[in-house]
Image 1 (spheres, helix red, strand yellow):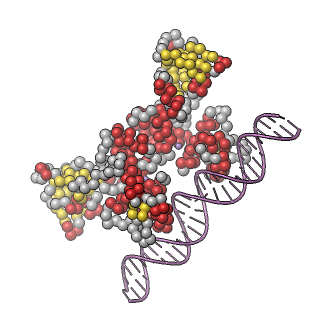
Image 2 (cartoon, rainbow over the protein chains, first blue to last red; image 1 turned 90 degrees about the vertical axis):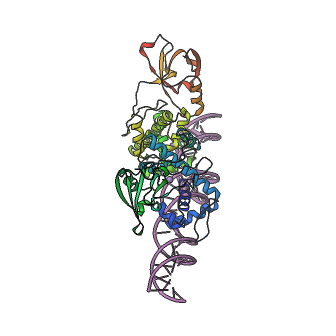
Image 3 (cartoon, rainbow over the protein chains, first blue to last red; image 1 turned 135 degrees about the vertical axis):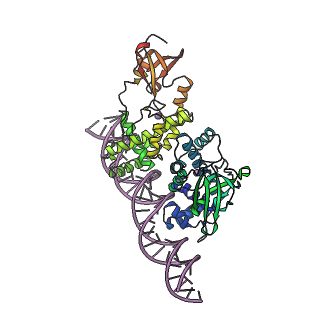
Length: 225
Length: 225
DNA sequence: TTATAAATTTAAGTAAGCTTAAAATAATTA
DNA sequence: TAATTATTTTAAGCTTACTTAAATTTATAA
Ligand SMILES: [Mn+2]
Ligand SMILES: [Mn+2]
Ligand SMILES: [Mn+2]
Ligand SMILES: [Mn+2]
């Protein structure tokens, strides 16, 4: 399938995952940098190919085939990210930018060689789950965002969710990385601000950050650090 | 530029290198798997973009910009081949097949990171020269094909030129590889057959092979092996 | 509830990159 | 040289992936 088609089903899948974000043509169009008209047009064409369910004025939905295609693109994307991060030492935002292209011209053969070489990883360097060869993906991993973390607890960062370089640069500069432990000092619920401590440094994070930093409970370390 | 354009200027460049092969639309068309009409069409369009010089019924020629583009694609191709060969251990024909795609969606940034990681190689695993970042390529390296090698001399294989898997499989099965030494036993000039010895094994090669195996003189080993 | 704004869809059109069929030209063979 | 064959070019048409502009529908606000 074409690059345009692969990108199209991928953004539908991703917006569909982040429940709440609607998958009407306008949303897809903005994400892809095309006009609304083009997105509607594409949706109709992909409906004929049975990749997308299209009903006028309704949110777009993927068919089973569309979902499979999206997961296949995402698998290639995240395997490339892992490879570029580990072997070429690219940064968290560089790997995303390059994988956004490489994902489209990678054969099944190369994809599986990459996977084997990397030891069949199930998360990429951002902590994003890598679908397996059959499109199965590890959801429901007991992770949640810093926004809903409890004050006084220690957590392990397991995922940095995003694609813009500013976010990743900020994380890098402030020791926010997958695998790092942090303590939530206080939740300023009204203003959606969160005070955390990482490596003895205090950081006051707003919601645009805390909703993109996913953490996991660290049971036996609650009082340490 | 588009994938179609990159492939188009690349084959013109390559046919132009192998002096003798003409670069009329029909030749390009066959190489790309498109019709003659499509090749003529494309040639005209690329002439408008000043990548190709086009005169009815004449061989196609690259402009300076066209040549630069071709060399840039070839650089990306051969760096990928080197990378896939060294890190993922793909075979000589697998790396070609994959690089044929990857060459088109690789940013300048990634290209140079690849190059640095590999130690700025100047030949790929087939022995093909890798153009530098400015499009300079190491031609005239004192290499020649087995067809024109002298009987009784020892040579080092420096290049296996081709793209079909059958050729590379044959080479692999018979210890014909870049860096390997061989002795030319006899040249059957009339029938264009060459008898060589590699690792104590005698091999009788026809012209379709000897024209694709490039060797270099090995001055001090003439009598050994 | 109605007016207004926003989003979506339709319509018409474009460029890239192909196709087949026919016409023109060049190359080969008799 | 003339006739035949092969190649190249032109012409017309197709699909994909977009665009802008206008019409339609939905969502929001008065
Ligand atoms: Mn992409
Ligand atoms: Mn990722
Ligand atoms: Mn290619
Ligand atoms: Mn090569």
